Length: 125
Length: 125
DNA sequence: TTGATATTGATAACACAATATCATATAAGG
DNA sequence: CCTTATATGATATTGTGTTATCAATATCAA
Image (tube, rainbow over all chains, first blue to last red; front, top):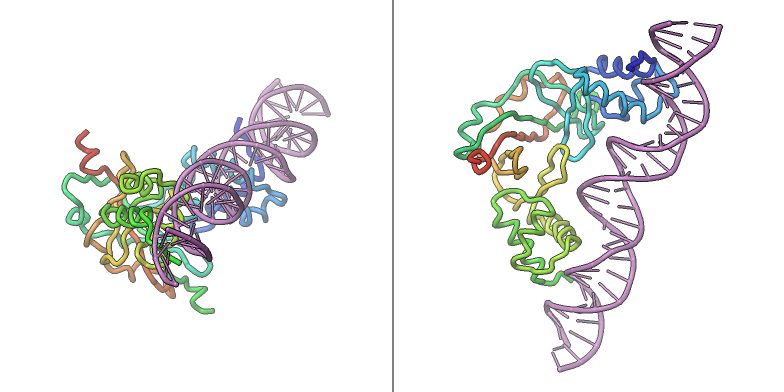
């Protein structure tokens, strides 16, 4: 159990090559080149499997369905273009001292930053 | 059109007094003291009306339904307790220089920070 | 107080993403 | 090359949050 299918390869490849987090439909589109006729159910199935195996990780966004990106990257945050709605990866640039802003007794386990704006491609149009 | 009902007063009051963003069901619970028998549809209706009037603003969170808070506050971010799932307001503490982290040609319009952790009440248990 | 009408509460209906179903296709060991 | 159990594709179903419907109620101007 766990066969090496062309669909699974195409989906893994699409996520590895994208360089940015993809939603389920984006994965479908990006994978169709390598796996014609690919169905959305298969995309969801394989996303779930890849998550369980730890090959990809989920990028949750406010108000929209999650995207997925290759796992194992350094700490980073994301940028969402409000025109094309694509999400991009941002390197470096993290938070200053959070502790000052925290109420007494609060304990931090993680944080996430989402920057909104217009990407380079959309800005030119 | 636009009548002053006890339900509308209760809902507005609940959001103003909460001191933290509330979800629709939290608004329902918090308003029931002032408006017994309040229905969820009325909560949604009034949230929508208060949004349109600019009295409250939406706080979108990854992977869950939006919360709402009184409008007009200074720039701030939010903390979500992973135990009780309440969301709290964080003052101050903002981002350093975002520009360095941005790819060329990207334009920023806003950003949001969500801190995950355990709130003071839950940490004591 | 009265009457017109906005508002409410209960609940049906909707929208959307994600999962389940199931017949068919296919990978992989023998 | 066969066999068989897993994977796939099409689509029905689910689940959750929100909105629509509608009879009953309550606001507020006259």
